[in-house]
Structure formats: C-alpha cells, structure tokens
Image (cartoon, rainbow, N blue to C red; front, side, top):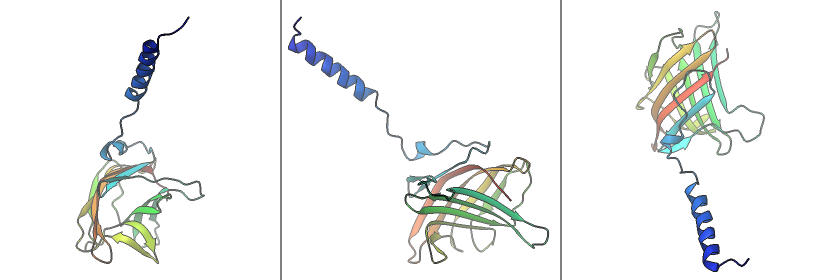
Length: 184
C-alpha cells in the first residue's frame, strides 16, 4: 500500500503539534517557590531581585540547607542559624537570630536591623569573613517564625529583607519561605 504524501504530512504535522502542545509551561520565579508548609519538609526558597533562589547540592559532602539552634545553660545567649547554599553558584542566604524566643505553638516576628541586635541576614558569596550583601542599621526586613515544634525540632516561616554591599548597592530578597528540621 502506497501512502499519499498529503496523508504523511498530515500525520507528521499532527505528531509535531501534539508534542509541542504537551511541553511544560515554564514557571515564573514566584511559581517555583516551595509551598508554605510546616512538616519539616526541608524546603527553602526566595526571590533575589526577582530571580528564584533555592539551595542546591553539587555532589560534594557539605549540606546545602542547615539549621542550628545553639543554647546551653552555661552560655549567656542562644542563637538560631539558618544557612541555604546553592553550591552551583556559590550563593548563600544566611540568618542569625540572637536570643530568639523558642516556644512551640507560637509565631514570632523579628525585624531585620542590626540596631536591635536580634537578626542578622546576609546573602551572596562569603569573602574573608564578610558577606557580599548583608544587613545593617539601615536595612529593612522581617523574619517570621510561623510554626515551631521544639519536640520534633521543626521550624517554618517567611522572610524578606534588603541587604547592601560595600559600595551601597542594594539587593532585594523577597517572598522567602522555609520549612526545615533543626539540630541543637
């Protein structure tokens, strides 16, 4: 049986149309953010100047998302440290809360401003002990703990902040969210 050239072209066109119509729509940066959960899912994401950021492992031994709560009766302070690293770009997002209120079942809102001494935030690449972009007394931002379970060691929340480099260039970190387990 000999096929007509028009029939062959029709089927070829139909197959190509079906293939392209089934291709996935590219998600916007905001659509790529992880869901707001409180299960210890190990998620972290934000927009940095409108671009999606998440921790990403490149196969080395280091963790890309770490959360530590440091508290000891002999120390006069406690701290909560969260570090998210994209090892492909060597770009990090870091939070350090001094003397956070740790109590299950409550939510806590902290202002990001070194003047209060409560929250320090930074992002970019670390260079000789200084972050490429970090908060200072002029920085605006919030770090909100929306869920905390001290028995299961789960902490979830949201954040946004502005940070500056040494030349005064500002970077905007927005729509941040995390849902992680912490160790102490």
